[in-house]
Image 1 (cartoon, rainbow, N blue to C red):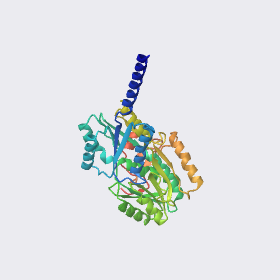
Image 2: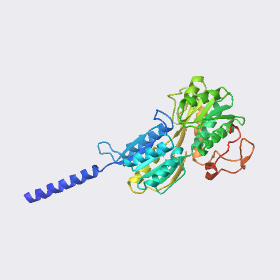
Image 3: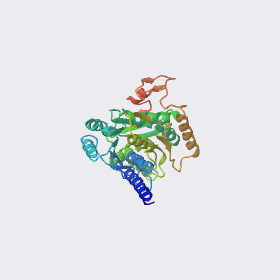
Image 4: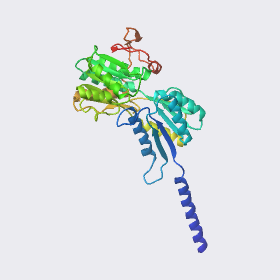
Length: 360
């Protein structure tokens, strides 16, 4: 009897120890680099929403965490990014995500030195055995906001505050313009290039300048909500980008293009943890749930909302493509013939501005 009792107790102890050992294994560590300070809206904010989604999806209440995440904010692109990446590697982070185009080269360099660590270069295009790339088809959302902007504009002139003239930004400017001109063939989009992603003072100044040039609708591809705040102050319209910005511009916001990173990030972390991660290239849009438009302002008519949401469904089904020919650039050259649709390669290499854009 005592022998059986001892055997049973020992078995129970072994089971408990096994469970404890499994639950006490160190959590997988994931890190993010942010190109600007973390605020309550914008590019960095939306990626941070994705970071938090990882923990929410993979950790269970009342149990030791399977994964922990961290971030380093306001990291300059270039040598400083290399320093931060090496520091994170030294701290044992197994997956490092770098969501900014200017982080691409530092990511590739540090990844080559640390093949045991996985990296995700978000908006970059250079890959390696331990570096994957991912981006979203922002231009699909931009086209839809151009439609809404044209419906709300009285002057037919929009202003666009842009960071750097890289293909991703050019795609957005062109798609926005084509969306506007699908409603108003005479619409114009005026650009101011800042050569920076995040400088709220200069973003605001550019917005003011564009509104002084008859723009009654503003769009932007920068990191803060300064353009939205400027439109709110002047009683103009604006399109939010990256995230909903109605807190900043409750009256000015027409709608928002939001980027949804949580599902992708969670899948990639799970892949590393299960040993199934591979260097892939992802480019998802409305159909994949990575891009969405909505968050309409209270003054936007229901008819405009319905029109935009209907067009969004059409894009998801492949019925509408923002870059369908004919495409003519703003110097009069035909870039895509009538009846043709731009290929992914043509979109990724886009280096011209379409007819209706005022700028170079």
